[in-house]
Image (cartoon, rainbow, N blue to C red; front, side):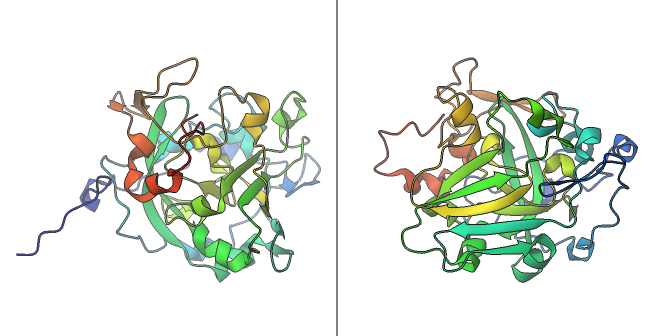
Length: 318
């Protein structure tokens, strides 16, 4: 008899919640202003048309990545979002619609064989897309479980062809205060930046996400392309990326630059290492009254714990 032993983060696909209507009706009130990846448009600009990559969804699900809990309802995931560029509340769906995502260009530079700029619509058709069910854990102690569609970051790194001196990847989002009112607040170190080591980036788990719930990703989630690193707190998963740089020195990230005593570079999930102002021992599941114990590395330790051997002196869990 063949006995299959599941990893600690696996559970049958049957526990996934069926797809429901994702975008809340408030999304339709948000026409108007836009941004083209850093160049300003008039605030009266027409809303963009249909997504030209819609034919790529739903992508084939990778059955290796399943969950220990039901999927979060689509409406709950759609309407509870951190995107400080558009405000500090969780209700930023309407304001985020100012972000026009076509055309959208991503710069790839630094320690690579050849720097280049590539349109998002070209990139997403050059590299493999797949759907994965992942847990997502916010540093604020709430969580959700969603089906992300994206490009394995490892495949993107291979496409970019970094040089041997590249030890880190730095991700940068758009910058345009005309359409992102939060970027007018000068006490924040805009634009939003994040970083990973090359070893983290070439692990199997990180995704450059382009879709969610079987559709192209909406603006409140970081359209048209964002990062997801499921074993780290959510602020590491930078949204609406416009630049990816391969560098030799560890980059200072957005929240690290703002408050390094609370938000460090590594930000791996650990229930035993608390935020200075609240416990990380448990998490509130978005859209429910369920409170679950927080899992070390958000439950993905089997895949990532070896990345941190020899780094015990670092503040890996803040």
